[in-house]
Image (cartoon, rainbow, N blue to C red; front, top):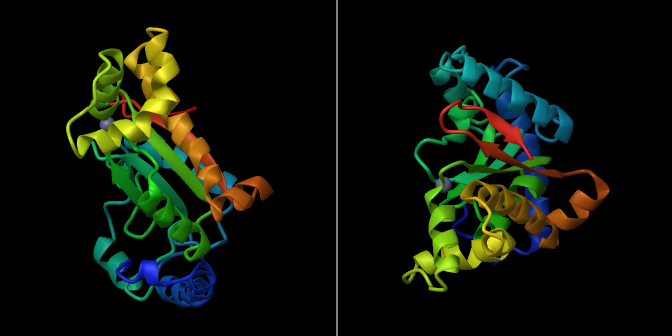
Length: 234
Ligand SMILES: [Zn+2]
């Protein structure tokens, strides 16, 4: 899907998006009920946020509804996708976005890495979600007891650098949590600071920045709680 991403200019990407948009609406609308697959671009940021919150409530209460109809849904979406929200979450195996928001195949456009941080590839992916797929809500989802945050916190505290490759995580996270570390704040406070900092970083995108400024796209930070399953909006 993204194999030729680098060869496309932004204008080409946006033009391609218009074509993909119409294809996806047809594909999604053919046999999927409207409650589960709104046309792309039709879900406002506030409605998307309400839907995520409602799904998380079902997940917490154990009344998950989206386990049914998976084969039908898969077939209906084979011609195009119509996600209503993008989620940048940690790779932690205990925080799978589709499950914790009780969503279906095709509902969420998800990027994951250890520490839910923004890097150019992540930003490019989220730009694609907005400009091509029409997703107007982006959630940065941190969680308590995050190993990536803990490792970066400790490295900063001990004034050392994480080993090669892992140091990428540190570079992406440390600026956002430095004040928490220097003031001896908790690692959970660092998790919250990181989610907020990464959400703020989206504004640097030439695609997302103006959209956030105009209100057409909204970015929210949130924290997932491992034991309760609850999401707290930050
Ligand atoms: Zn984590």
